[in-house]
Amino acid sequence: MLFSRELIDEKLRRSIENSKDYIGLGELASYIPELMKVDKDNLSLSLISTTGEVFTYGDKDITFSLQSISKLLTLIIALTDTNPTDLYQKVGSEPTRYEFNSLIPIGDKPANPFINAGAITTASMVLGLNNDHKFERILDFYRGISDFAEAYMDHDIYMSELKTADRNKAIAYYLKSKGIIDQDPGEVLDLYIRACSICTNIEGLAMMGAVLANKGIGIRTREMLIPENIVQIVVSQMASCGMYENSGSYLMNVGIPSKSGVSGGIVGVVPGICGLAVYSPRLDRTGNSVRGKELFKIISQDLGLNIFV
Ligand code: DON
Image (tube, rainbow, N blue to C red; front, top):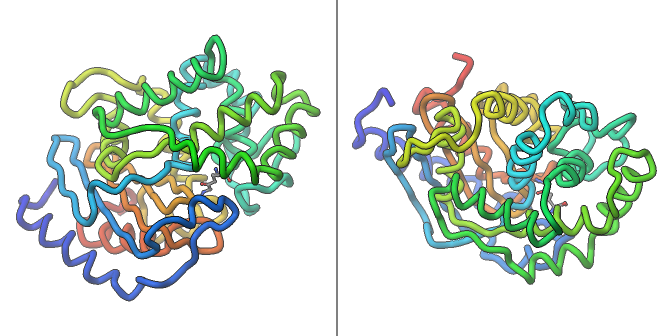
């Protein structure tokens, strides 16, 4: 980082202060009832540099579910279990203007791995003896790349989504009907929902961003956790598709490859520099955290993190 620790701390504190106008804007995701049981105006933020410096603000002990951020995990594991050529025969790599749970951008294959149809497809490519084993692999992988941050599956969130998953069920059965997935759609969806229900804290999420920013090398251990060719694919897909139909303008305004989830988390990757994560549960109409997006924009400007300038 180009600034001293003190200056980074000062800039991050100021950014949080400057985003206060956004408190109260946006709504919680109500289609998964359990996600309504949070303090709407909670905020936590963490930046972890590739050199291992940690800056964390707000409630750092609060845990929240990854939701669509888990699509990064299933994509990485599916790419490792198969290979990019085979995976991209089943999933596209292009952004879509349709919302994340739309059936329209499926065509011959789902538009990209981050819309629900794409992530249900990548979940079908995770290898394992059964769903328990596949889920354990996903959770263990997250534990490793978050440097063993708190991580567990929240059963109430899982059940809440399972009960209200009509749209995702339709997507999974449609994918099966088109031969894009060949397993039982209910089983694949179950794995997808379990992954969405993984809960963690803000430093765990920022650490995952930092590992991606560090070409897949563990920040503390210096161990190779994700192969570099997979990091390249995942981070570029975050840039083009990570914020759904808002990805283009978000990239233009913020300039940080990012991935959001409907619980209000956003994780960003600044290659070679840092991972950044914000949790703020109120969402805009595209399912992205309102204050989270604003904070990413301010911090990107203030700390010069935009990858394009
Ligand atoms: O499948 C769903 O609808 C949720 N479990 C995840 C969606 C999500 O997080 C979209 N992101 N902003």
